Length: 441
Image 1 (cartoon, rainbow, N blue to C red):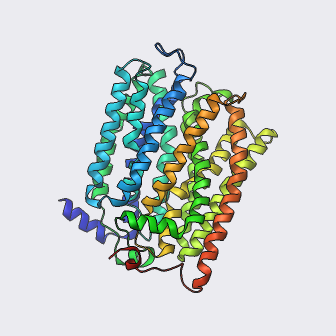
Image 2 (cartoon, rainbow, N blue to C red):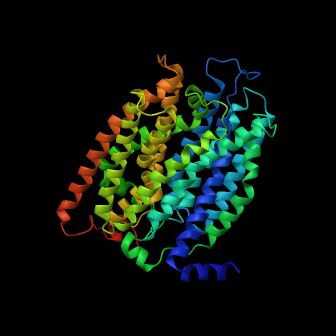
Image 3 (cartoon, one colour):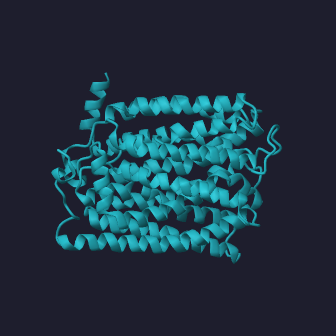
């Protein structure tokens, strides 16, 4: 039966294939967030057994982010080398491990249960690369990537709203709520991963336009990084800033909304993210019309820069009382995700296509992610231990300004670098290298 369905998908109309593949990726990653983010909807004040200078919720967030960051580091090797046939089992096994950690979090008293959040984050960091492996290297990768990125924009707010509803209406305690929220999404997770396993690999036309995607050896990974080191360093710097701010805004949304006067409104988490997803992902999906890979790479850099600018401009307008707190959160979120989402999908996918090297975009995504989540931990430490006498809203404003200024500069320099790299090969779509030069076949 599975082989028959796979053949039908291979022969399906491109629009139908895109809808099926995109929805499967969206639902799979959306479900993963139900195992990762619901705990942040709780405040965790006056927790029995916790008597430390470090705030308990910050300790939980840091523990999970530390596990997630370590997972990204492990994923640089795992995601670039795993065979397509093993992805589905890996997704289900890793998410299952993370749910068991949430059950342990509810059963073990503080302060020892903080370690459970580390164990919860450790498996989840590899899910994005496993799911994106089904999306990359296709002529419709921009649309598939946009649909996949929509999952983490929308899901974070939705699962936090679910968590808040469980505590406020269903009577679930804040300690059991994370495991209960994850369990609620298990059926959708299994269904979506089953569909992902049915997707056919990229065809010959996909490979002609976007380069063949294949597992990479350590030598091939090192060669790719060396070939584009200056541009990649600038891009990773931009991504570190975005990841740190996005994680802070995401993990402490309850505190920020309370500081803005929206405390106790469970629906605010999801209601504010829907327009963010429409703005950010509509712009990213539009890149599909640009067939030339170098031109597409430049357009994506422009989108990232525009996102940084919107983040700073919206914050300035909010401080000048030109827009409401809700409008600020929506516009700042749109700027943040317009800059952030291309890194997780189309930017590195097009960079691989531009390079002409047989590679995987997932490898580059995980190089950036490893650095990004280290930046997230650093921002949390600065917020808790640094000489920062700011409330949650003030800290968000200060961070938004700094990230906007540095991000615009780094993105512009990266665009100039890749543009100049292409000049020696005028008339050719990026520097083309045969597979043998990087040890491929």
